[in-house]
Every structure is written in structure tokens, then in C-alpha cells.
Length: 433
Ligand SMILES: [Zn+2]
Ligand SMILES: [Zn+2]
Image (cartoon, rainbow, N blue to C red; front, side, top):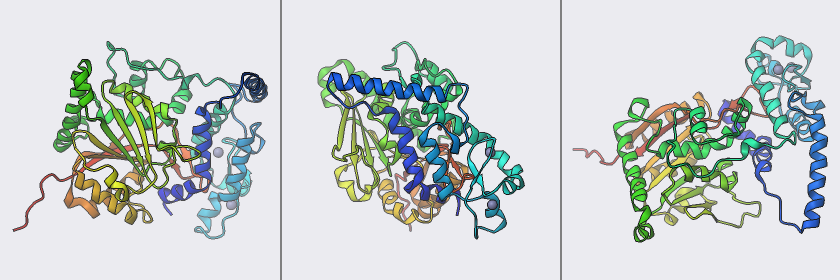
């Protein structure tokens, strides 16, 4: 089973659970309560945080999972022991009869092998990942340490006189005044969630890093010029009330939405701030798309210019909710869709078919090189003669800076939006003689 397969299987189980913990718990606002109850609750929380603080300080972030002072981390260790496999057993038995990873590597603190002997035998290969696992161990302890996570206090609207620079995360965060991201660890934390709105913004913005010199094709330039013409019109109309009323919003579709639809809505303001004059509607569409715990709300109005809409269905089934499509206002994003994955490929085909008919720009990402290649190969094989490339596959400067590891196999890792590419249905069908 390839990395993609393992991670997708894992997503349905333990990994998915972990994602929900690490993303949602950071942002979930406290429910409304009366003042006294809120005060008591706050004190309780502070005491709890204080307790955790004593156990996990900024210089004391590394703990073997089984001996972590944080319950969630101990539980994670147990999950890996239950669902994971010993890497040496896997190598030596060709996948048959692997034992549970009961032994924790002393350097990264993860249960990686069935015994110390098997750990020692795999040392050279484990060394390639051990440092990354150690980093993940410390990062997750840091997120749960109870300290105030100032890096998640994001800036609001962009100052008119400062131009956003999309060369890299560093220049982006600096020119967007993310003053609280002051360490590489903080950068890893915020990039993991910001990768979604900022990748969208980087594609759409007039100062996009995806230029003709950086993978964009002639067809890509045409598509992006159409969208940017609309954005320009929004800017010009800004001061004219009547024109504002007539504006068609930008429609940003996120298909096969999962983790990205579960992010706190206010995070998508970071996309809106990059296109400050444009009304934006983001549509999350996919069978796994659930906006709230109750699953009741289907539209969330985040600001006067930004609305998020959730459709729990396949795009090709729900398409009449969205038609007609217009390449000047509509753009599609597929975040790590797994189009080439054997079990997902047939399921994606009717959606890709409809996407190419819209003639709108479609951008997709992959969580590492092999994952992206697999999707690109499948697309080329199944739809090559019907599509144009807009952006040749390449690394995304706004990928997450964090590696996520599969619970079932710690050798398998993923980086959200590691790479990116763009396609579109051919505008003119070639007529056969
Ligand atoms: Zn073993
Ligand atoms: Zn290790």
C-alpha cells in the first residue's frame, strides 16, 4: 500500500480524530454562559492550564508518548501501539505478521518498533524520520501546553500602503504583519491552517508567485487574467454604491472538502483580506463536508464580503445548485484529492468531467511528490486530450511547514498542500475530419 493509500485509510480512523483535536480545539470559542459560571469555568481552565504548564514548559516539550504529562498524547501513543506496525517486522516479513510497536524510540518518543532489538536494526532508516518525529512530538506538546498561543492572533485588513509579497511564507507573514509568528515552531503551527486560504489567495492575487517564469502556462495566464479582471472591476467599483450592488461575487469552490471545511470560518478572512474589494463566496462541497458539530448551518456569513457555504454531497450530483459557471468569477480548488488513488479514481471521474465542461480554472494540490505525481498521471491518462495545463506541477511556497504522520505507519507522512498544479477544460474542441 502506498503512502497515499495508508494516509487515506488512516484519515477515516485515528488520523482524522487527531486532526479534529489539533485544529478545532485551538479555535473553538467558549460557549456563552452567565458571568458567574463563566468566571468559575475560567478559573478552572486557568488552574488546569497552570497544572499543564508546570508539566510542559517551553524548554520541556519533549516527552515519550507513554509518559507524557498530557493525556491526549498518551492516548495517541496507545492508538499507534494498537493500529501501527513495527517497521523492522514489516521489512523482514514483507508485510506478513508484523508485531505491534511496543518499544518507544528514546530520541523521538514515538512507539516505532516491537522491541529494542528491532529498533536498533532499523536505526539507519529510522534516522531519516526520527528528527521529524521529534519535532512533531515537541510541536504537539507545545500546542497543548496551556500557554497563550499568540501566533494564532491573526492580523486584520491589510494596510493600503503595504504591498503583500508572496515569495515565501517569511515575506508573506512579514508584509501581512503577522507580528506574533516569531519562531519556526510558531510558523509550523500557523502554516498548517493558513496553507488553505493563503494558497487560494496566492493563486488569485495579482502578485501571485505562480507566474510565467514559475510554471504558469499561456492558457494559465488567460484564465488568471479573466479572474483578475473581475477582481480589478471590484476594486474600481468600490466607491460607487450602485456598482457595488451589481457586482458578481468571486465564487471559490473547494471540492472534496474535509479538514479545510472544518477550519474555523474566521480563518478564511485571511483570503478576504488579500482581495479586499471583492465579495467572495467559498463553497465547500463534498460528502465529508460538515460545517458544524450539529451539521445544521449551510451558510456562514463571516463578513460583509465573505460567506462560506457548505454542501454535503458530490459536486457532480449538486452541480445544478451552482450552474451556470463563469470563468471570470469561478475557480475550483481540490486539496489533496487523491484523484489517482485506486479507490478514489473512479469516484472523481464524473466530477472531473463536469469540471472540465465549466472551462473554469481548477487548481489541485498533493501532500508529497509521489501523491501529486499519482494524481497528475491519472488525470493525464483519463482526461489528457480534454484539458489544458494552467500551472505545471510544482512545489507550493505556501505548503504547510508541518509533517503529519500516519498512525498506522509512522514511515508514511504528509505535508498539506506540498505541491500544486492547475488545469482547465480545453476551450476549443478539436474537430475530427
Ligand atoms: Zn519488530
Ligand atoms: Zn526516533
